[in-house]
Length: 392
Image (cartoon, rainbow, N blue to C red):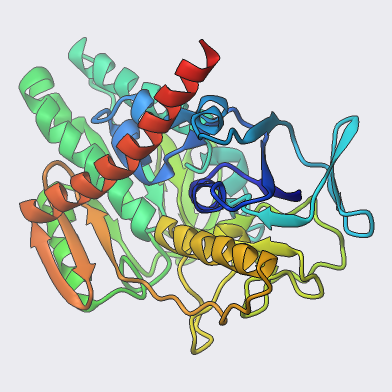
């Protein structure tokens, strides 16, 4: 029996299991320190209040039990990997593997050269952080409803995909709250800040323009080429000497791979992502793979692929196929994937997209994104429901 261990119940880990579970003569174990799968791509809506928490989290144990051949789920924090004995070390025990898939994702990367940033701002990579933001945002609206006239300044630092989506959705919800709190809605201000000279750096100019126009229409203050020098308990200080007050800061400026448990011999880049071969194996190990945000994945030309759910799932599908082929002594060609496109949620029923080289924006993007998300969510939910039936 070939023992496959998957570390991490994110987009990549779950997709790998879905593809591997029907491979003969295998047993699969999923290990995650959390008991839930976190749908991070939908967090922008939850923070703003347009989505409920049940749309963000799925029970992993029930999901694992929902297969015809149950997958073993272990809720634990990984302490290390013993490559000589082929085991994953947990608290008080070890789990053996024949093939290991590292899919532990990423966490928010707070640049250490920005003094005070980590202490005074929060990322959105964790569900508990999103939960806190959601309630704090709602509390601010309640204060306005009761007549509070204090100016509230929300700063979203980082104008990549996550930052733009969070800022747009919060601004859209404030527009909706106008009927409830009247002119006091204007006393909650949202500022989107980035050091680059544009929002959505690296994306097509047409997408950037669509997003920028939408943000401005929603009343979001956009500040680009704005280098944050430091943060104290009241203000952001910029390198040019300017400063702005804040009530709270959401930082979406970058990621760092969750790889602190791997041996020192594993090669990493400056973002703590594992360096992998063209076959997505950890260098020097034929039985250990890394997928998704924790890995430095490139396209066929050597260009880094963005850390998205799409790439996590594509890399997972490739590794699952590679392991299955290996068990049948079949060679697998190197990983050769690219982005098929992306959706940008821009508040309410509006968005921008690029699909197979075609760029467009408007209400149609919203419905396309909803369909894609709904299909994914229903697939996972049906598996969870099947798992609960097994428990009965």
